[in-house]
Image (cartoon, rainbow, N blue to C red; front, side, top):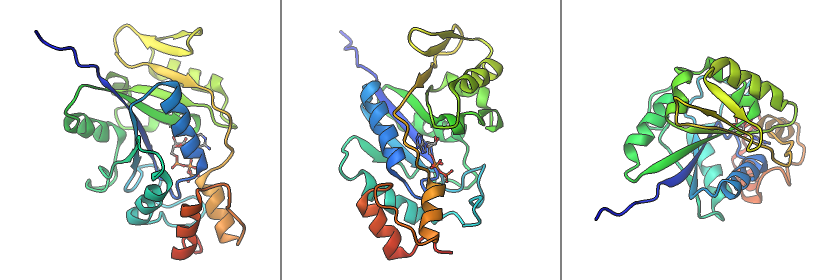
Length: 226
Ligand code: ATP
């Protein structure tokens, strides 16, 4: 008799992570707990399609530095994993391609949860073949200060027209696509990589915004100075 294998629930958290900060960690901890995921993969973009340099005039730190900071940040969390999938691909890297490659690589049955902050989600209509994404993954959209939940609903309604909102579960479903849009409210963590880079450049303290080991790395390697 064939045994039923339960699909693994894998969260995907893509980003620039320049640097990874406590907001990213709070986000990952919140989602892994509330959705009972088996693991979360942090996927640093080699060169994000939407960001060639940071808007603040600084260049994006090397992939090696960003991975090194991630390694230090997640070392205490056994269910957090780093994927270097994007390093092996020629830039620019698009989510649809990354997800398709991941799906080929994952050998066991898996449900993917694409975790994204409301700020990044509002730009989804600029992503390559974005309308196909809900056939491949569930979306977990996290509130972020300054980005009203109504706007997220508007973006879903406009781009994914067959989706209907279930207010009880705060989930959008479709009859045609497998993927769900799951809206999650999280205790706001008003921290961003931009703010951290700015503080370091201005000689200000970043204690409490990033894990200690990441702070030590930034200082030792003199990142974000110029
Ligand atoms: P930057 O300031 O350089 O734009 P960032 O702080 O937004 O960077 P990213 O690496 O671009 O960090 O973010 C990766 C993902 O994490 C995105 O989906 C983003 O929305 C989300 N995210 C980042 N910071 C937070 C936070 N404080 N609260 C909730 N989500 C966050």
